[in-house]
Length: 231
Ligand SMILES: NC(=O)c1ccc[n+]([C@@H]2O[C@H](COP(=O)([O-])OP(=O)(O)OC[C@H]3O[C@@H](n4cnc5c(N)ncnc54)[C@H](OP(=O)(O)O)[C@@H]3O)[C@@H](O)[C@H]2O)c1
Image 1 (cartoon, rainbow, N blue to C red):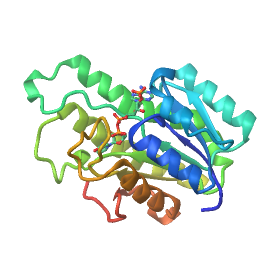
Image 2: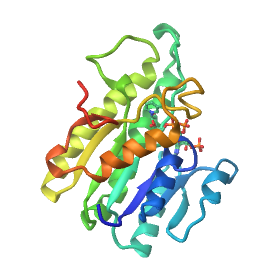
Image 3: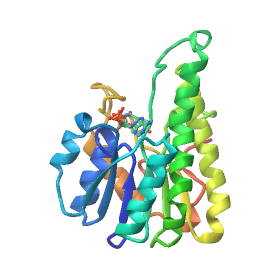
């Protein structure tokens, strides 16, 4: 992929920060989302004239509108949107102990936030080169591979996959490709220290995959190694 204008939500830590750093190394221009200065010090330390940190909560409509205006004024287009921000707040909680609030909050961020950001930036993606939407999902979204537990997170990621499928259908006429991708089990705050992959290993696989996507792959669910995952 030629040098691209990319937005990464949740770009201040974990897998998001790993992708931001690698995309910058590869010469791309990156707008990186963060929510608070206090948790964005590693992002600020990646300072580069092609890095544009931008304060955004993905569930906040006015933040999304401001992000649209910033990208429109600065670049006039967006080539790749990486919906990476996500939460997992019900790890291993038994199903009947999952409350309505945690289910709703998880859904709001992992599904609602992706929809809101995508809808807001869509006019810029249509103007972009490459026109890609990458939704960071999880194998925990897979109904075919489900072994139970962590239900709010699973439900939200399964819904994210369905959202991706609908984006692929609705946006195909404009030449926009939308896929969902599993980043691996990764040593971030979410994945914990025992995870299989380091952040930089996951980011390297993800960046290879997403910068070589073709429109024919739209609507699919990929493992970070490029193999297709069962729904
Ligand atoms: N780690 C794994 O093993 C693993 C496996 C499968 C899938 N994933 C997926 O990979 C993605 C990144 O995960 P990670 O492991 O890097 O997680 P992480 O270390 O917990 O980081 C999560 C990121 O999302 C941001 N975020 C959360 N809620 C947000 C909101 N409302 N608005 C904007 N940003 C928000 C966080 O920002 P703050 O710093 O402000 O909280 C942070 O930057 C997620 O979608 C996750 O579900 C991870």
